[in-house]
Amino acid sequence: MKTKKIAITGNIGSGKSLICKIFNHLGINTFHSDEETKKLYLLPDVKKEIIDHFGEEVYFADGSLNKKLLSYHLFQNESALKFIESLLYPKLNQVFDEWCEKQTSDFVLFESAILFEKNGSGIILENNILQGTSREIAIEGDAQVQYNNNSGVAEYNKKSVSEPL
Image (cartoon, rainbow, N blue to C red; front, side):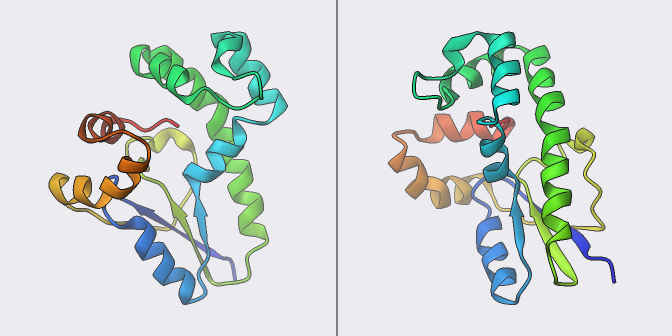
């Protein structure tokens, strides 16, 4: 039997992670697209293309991504965002497909905050679970994480519009 791919999506702070943990407890594994995308930025071929497009300053001397600078470029320039999406989505799809091939359960979850906004990603999923919450509750629920990152409501507002990183 082929593994069914189920999307779990929702706004930032809506409880997607909690739902994934519940499913994980039931033996259904989750592919966390945000975490996997972060790994893609460190691949040598991806780094080269990003540096060629944006300049060396988008990576720090230690090789880590300068998220703040890249985010600035992506939020200021739609063509820059399209470039990153065209670079990363095919690679993310490949990583997801390879991950799915290793799974043994009947179902897997693909967790992504921007699944519907980025329907051009090319990932084929059989069903969707949409977890939603009010903006106020999402901000309150996300406050613990935001506090540790020295950001707050303004940062939440930016990220909730589009979260390319």
